[in-house]
Image (cartoon, rainbow over all chains, first blue to last red; front, side, top):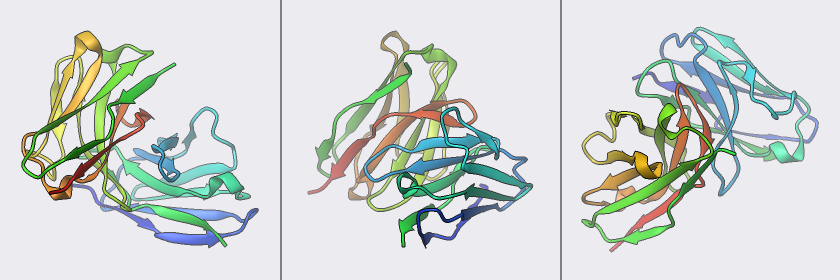
Length: 107
Length: 116
């Protein structure tokens, strides 16, 4: 199985900050990576796929990058509605695997 | 509008059986796989596996293989997740999700509580 190591597990930030979350795969996954946002009591919401393809309706302050084993989700100018938990998911091979999650909290 | 509507919360005792459902609408049900994802209380997301509604082909994560069963009823565009003998450690929210490579649309989740 491919292991996804996500960091940090949590972070505190202020509105307007730039936030970076990283996922590292245990082997190359050829950009087969999705990012999800989850708010308490809600289902995850897909933010992007193929490492950097933003889903329709997702604000452009969200961006993705990376290649090989290392991938990054960046949120520019953090907004109040962005405080949530973020997960990466590799879909390069079965079984799919999620990162452990990053909780973005208000400083 | 694509919708995945899951069945309601369940409270069961250890050893009991259970089947929860996920009804798809607003799209061609047999075109996309249905995945199941577990979220234990206060924990992260775990991919359990998926089923192809067109032919009921399944892929189970090794962590869940043998403990759960996926099925579908195409005639009513509904997917199912089933346990034959629940354990307390099955207490979690279970999500169904629609996709092929990755899951774009999710159900609202079903809370399963297993307690004696």
